[in-house]
Image (tube, rainbow, N blue to C red):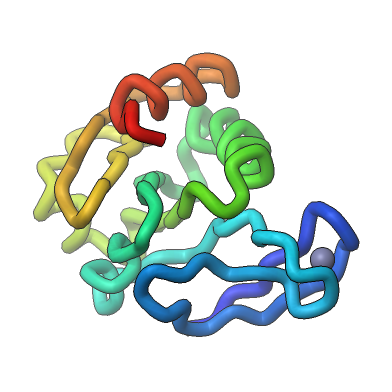
Length: 142
Ligand SMILES: [Zn+2]
C-alpha cells in the first residue's frame, strides 16, 4: 500500500511505497527526510513495524475522542523526528488482529517497536511534550 508523505521542508507530496531496509523515505524534490507517518493494516503489520528507526504504532478508531486529540501531536512528532522515527496508524475497527496480538485493551494505545520488539507502551491521550518524553524514555539510544 502506498501513502502520500508531505515534505516539511519544501511541501512536495511524495508517494511512498516500500522503503528498503536500513533506509528512511526522503523527498524526491529536495532530498530531506520525510515525516514518516503511514497507515498500517493487519495484512501488512509485520512489515509495517520493520524499519531501521523506532516505529510508533497508534491503535485508534474514528469514534474515539482521545484518539483525535493525540493525532496532531503524533503528526508534529513525525515532523520533528523526520529521518529518525516511523509512525504507523492502525484503525482497530478495520484491523483487529494486530491490536489483539499485542493485548491492546483500550484506545488510544501507542506501542513503540525497536528492531521488531515492543520497547514501550502508552495508553491514553497525551500531548506532544509527554509523547516526546515517553519516546525518549522508551528508546533512549535515539
Ligand atoms: Zn522536499
